[in-house]
Image (tube, rainbow, N blue to C red; front, side, top):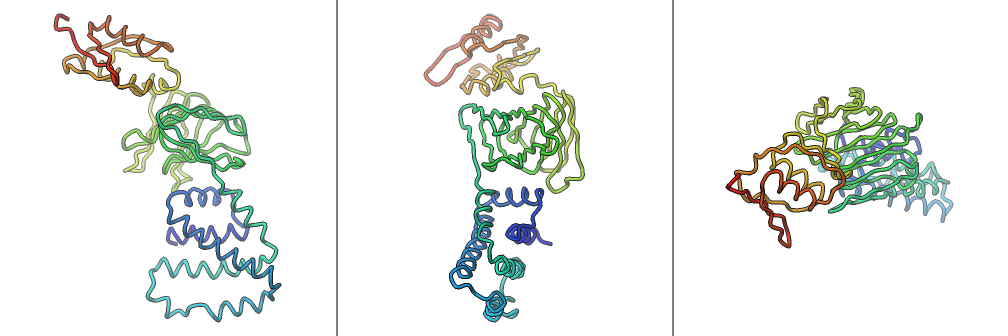
Length: 330
């Protein structure tokens, strides 16, 4: 079965109220992958509204109306010039049309659809946003967004960017985050996700346990434990796990830093991300200066003063940046 045909079948099952929770999640995220997918759904929605309205206004005979529809449908020959997808879509349409006619009293289904697909989208651009869900779970978003159904009954989230989740666990309602083609399912936990980490999606577990799997391979699960990180390679579609050695992965949220013999170049990268500032190393020869220090919730100016004294730097503050220079006498 082709991919589009599969999702049209899900639309069919949705209108028939026969879709299960897993299929509902897949359909929901498919709808939000592209405007084309939304357009397909919209066409079926319009058809449903039209047929339902006629049935209500005219109190039509179901069997008689279905026969009329069949008589006016295109013939098989008229479909030959269309694409394979159009043919499959048309076949699925026949099934959906039959369901529409059988659901004479189904106007409530339309409201159900829009309640289910009514989404909240929380966007963080150049700031960190903290958001609390209806179940008291929390998320901190950095340069990205999360998207979820307004009722949040299925406890599923689609995300892009960087985020830290603190989850209220429920045995019968696991919490699932979809990060591109990776699904992250909690077992009562706190975890970090970054979809902007080059060619990979990074997950770091802070507390509890999470289960990872690819959307197209839900049976092949990877369990992540405290202190571990997982990297999902977007190109090879493989998940690898390892010990986490990045002590600053949450510095953008906590403003706590641990620099253990770290180069100035890497230190500046961490600080720019955490404080959303523009620190520029102007002299190449100082980039490999090493720093060992810890900072807890200090201002960027305070940290730069420590760097200045420790590494013998000159720092010039402009209207848009901090410029770092080395003293030749060092």
